[in-house]
Image (cartoon, rainbow, N blue to C red; front, side, top):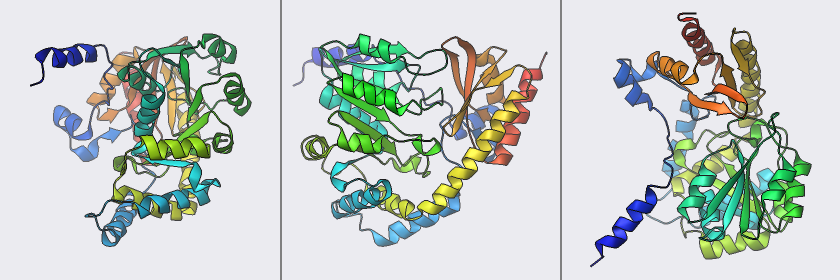
Length: 372
């Protein structure tokens, strides 16, 4: 029989862990405000609505006709690695497949971070790095970005102690939407004997990638996901790239035998086979992103920041929580960020096709003009 005290210990320990708030859901908000789900604009999680739903469904129908879900995926994982290999020009031996980059971040945290160790990241950034560090019993430190959202390399390196095992960097960063300089990240890796883990969830919308460096350096790993650029967020599939020795160790000793469903694997392969079409959609996202930033900056009291992602961070001259709630009442879900370094009242919005962005701009203007 399990002693009650052990369960109580776990529950008490969990009280110190943060809760990752995924925000309002389409159905939940529609019910709350008396609208149809089709009237809700979900713009808070950086999903890719440029990939047509009919296109994704056609891919899934092909997958269903081809796979035998009674059998665990093995050859399919090898096939996905080979397809990714051709896409990013590294060996399949450099690749680790996972159930989205979140699962891989959790896996790396579990491997490197235990009680008595620590990780470092930047501030502000994606909250999952701190969450997983603390779940695994490790300490977590954050180093503020500079006011221009660039890395403070000297401050990061000064924060390193003998207990530091991992430095997490999100590049392009969430929520600031900027990509960090390649030479600065490489300098971190060269000056640090732990792992530099770079989350490139949004790199396809930016200029550079560190995949080549991750495959060759001894202490760098890059996370990638199919959730953003490929529009497969609901299937939960991603991968990591690192040197062959570390990749082999993770694959054979730490990763689960069958971490991803056969459906997700096959869908990812077929999306990679359509890469030219996906690249065309990325160009559309970039063009819409520019239009959105221009439109936001034309609204009095709004400042939109540059973006190298599929979302835009913007500041309003009113309380961001109030603006967020008023947008919800109009059926628009964005992300309330609050303060970002010296900038107060910030929100984040996903870049979506033009008709959606036009409605978002109208709703935001209406909210900001209330009682103006």
